Image 1 (cartoon, chains in turn orange, yellow):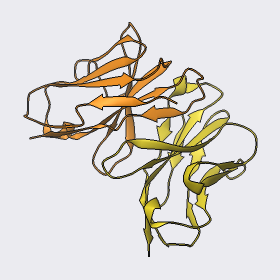
Image 2: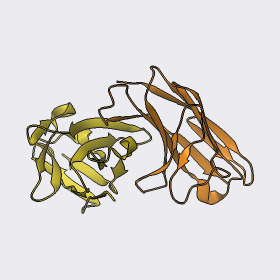
Image 3: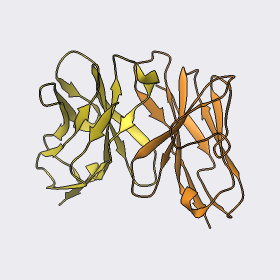
Image 4: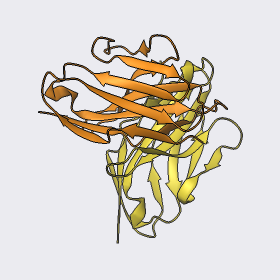
Length: 115
Length: 116
């Protein structure tokens, strides 16, 4: 299994600002993903973080709004840019292990509130 | 496209009674099915998965799930519920045929409430 650490765990942000969330995995993983969980809702995949190249975004999500980096096999960042109250959500980092069994491991999430 | 349905927003059960949380799925190929649990203010924790083999899968905390191909279901069960089982439960599916890039699609979640 993989242990995933995210920071910050929570933050309160002002409208129009940007915030970067960091995700660190304790072992090398094959794939990393970023999900959003809006209040009272399910998880929605934002993008797949690709090592050393541009992330693969899902429909409805764009790089300008959610730039993602993955410089190596154990670390990724998600930036939420030009935030509005609608961006208030929990952002979850996840990863698969090298056995690639399909099972995802999740971080504790970063709860963002935009005022 | 792959999808998951959890028809119940909330399930209430008395402690000691059996519980069932329902899940149905749709995929093009063979399904890889998962259950996750989310406690308040926490991330998701893996409970169990079905990839292949026995239709009855046993997982963490005494939970089990039964894969039913004809009914395209993967219901989560526990013989005797505990108050500490109260949490939000998510069913998820991945298309095993296409791989889907390990991309999981999650259901909307079912809030389980176990009362004394």
